[in-house]
Structures are given as C-alpha cells and as structure tokens.
Amino acid sequence: MKVLISGGAGFIGSHMVAYYLNQGAEVWCVDNLLTGSESNLAPYAVFPNFHFLRLDVADLKEEHLPADFNLVCHLASPASPPEYLKYPLETMRVNSAGTEKMLSLAQKAQARFLYSSTSEVYGDPEVPVQREDYWGHVNPVGPRSVYDEAKRFGEALTMAYHRCYGVNTGIARIFNTYGPGMKLNDGRVIPNFISQALSGRPLTVYGEGSQSRSFCYIDDLVRGLVLLADSGEHWPVNLGNPEEFTVKQLVEKMSQVLGRPLKVEFKPLPEDDPKRRKPDISRAQRILGWQPQISLEEGLRKTINHFQKIIGRS
Ligand code: UDP
Image 1 (cartoon, rainbow, N blue to C red):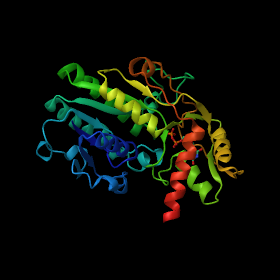
Image 2: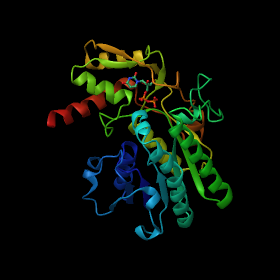
Image 3: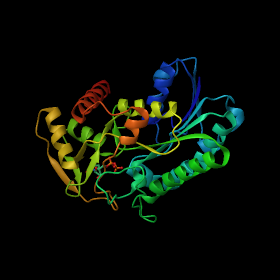
C-alpha cells in the first residue's frame, strides 16, 4: 500500500504517518514545516519505506512522487486559531490550491482521497449539537473566516472532484483534538493549560469560560480517520468526542488530574469565538462503527505525562 500524507509533520498528520508505517505501507509525507515540526517525524527517518518532501503542497509536482498511491490524505493546514490568524493567506491557499493539487494526484492515481475538514465549518452554531446536515453559521468576513471558509471551500472542491471526475473522496469534520505531538505553544486551549500548569502560571481563561468544546484524544481520532479512509463514504462525517465541557469545567478536570488547585487569569474572548461545540456522531457510529473510547480525564493524564517527560528531558 502507498499513502501520500500532506501535513505529515503536523499533530494529526504525524500520527497518521506512524499508523500507516506501522501497517507496513510506503508513506510519502509532504510538509513545508510552516506550523509542523520536523521533530514529529524524527522517529520515522529510519524506516526505509518513509519519504519526506519539504515542500508546499501547492508546489508538488508529479515527478516528485510515485504514480500509484492507494490513499491520498490532505491534512496540511494551520489549525490553531493563533496560527491561522498569523498565516491567513497560507491557510486559504493550502485548503484551496493545496486541496486541488492533492485531489488531482488522487484522480490520476485512482486513489481514495481523504480531506481533513473541521467542526469550524459550523461556525458559531445555533444548534446545541451539530449534525452533518447542519449548514453552519459562519461570518464570511470575520477573522476566523480564513480558516472556516477555506475549509468550506475545500469541502466543496472535494465534492466537485467526486461529482465531476468520480474521484473516491471522503471528508472528515474533525472536532477539537488533543494529545502528544501537539506543540505546547500552539495556542490552543489544552496545550496552553498544560504548559501554564506545568510552569506554575495561571491558566488563561478567555471570556467567562462558559463557552464549550468537546475534546477528542488523538488515538480515537486516528482510528476514526483510518476507518473513514477504508470506507467508501463520500459525504462528510463528524469525528469528535461528544462529551462536552465548558472551558471552566476543563480547568476543573486539569486540577483533578494534577491533584492540586490551579489559578486562573481571565482574558478577553477572541472575536467570533464559537459559544458551543458538540458533535452528533451517529453517522460515524452507523457507517464506520466508530466511537471514542478515551475519556477527557484519561486523555489529559496521558497528554500531561507525555509533556512532563519532554520538559524533564529539556
Ligand atoms: N481558550 C481559552 N484559553 C486559552 C486558549 C483558548 O479559554 O488559553 C478558549 C477559546 O477561546 C475557545 C476554547 O478555549 O473558546 C477552545 O479554543 P482552541 O483555541 O483550543 O480551539 P477552537 O475550538 O477555538 O478552535
């Protein structure tokens, strides 16, 4: 099996690289390291079936690659709000020109194509639980639009390649995911809270902390992505953990896992920050037989242990 993974040096991408290498596949990873980390790939450099191209996806040429991929995964994109706000045009390009490049490679290879979309396509949802048939509530000119609209365009392009050229496409709508392999300074809430707690700083709660998210541990997500890649499903599928927590409840969970009280510092709520987010995963359950198995408490414990070891070594 030959797999092409864009964004393979990123958080989710590097876990997908590991999964397919461990399955014995030949894995080609493309990443320009704009937000990805080469250190995520260091363990795989010794695999003879691993190939890394440091390139922007949009600059990929057919001559860089074998022609007979079975699976093309487009996972490249800044994904944390501070990072896509720092790289707005790069975010729009990788999800538009980058998606088209990956789709055309999948078309030529007659490969399965998997697009990593996001719960952000629902914007600031007006419904408490988001099903795939909810069209969303997105501000098209707000600061987050560079990510939300780029991902919506990426989904539309993916469906157009499926409808016009019969490409075997799949779309994963990924909800908040965390775990080892994230950068502690990527600005998302769980890495922020972990780095703040481990260095004795107060946890930065944006707004009143009453906004909610549903956090999925990386191993659960990778299992879902692989099942979706193996399926023939073309319509979007939500992948996320339906257990919902407010940011304040997340602080309590962190304090429970660390076994000590944590100080909190309130900061302004970013513009257009979604007030709630919780996936309906009944399609993933029905089509893929998938549901998350790792609770927030267990996932936080694993993630904190991982980062404690890394900090201890540095
Ligand atoms: N957040 C927070 N403190 C932080 C970072 C984020 O309170 O240090 C909040 C943020 O405003 C949002 C939620 O946590 O409501 C999740 O933010 P994150 O950046 O992880 O992902 P998002 O779901 O917004 O893409």
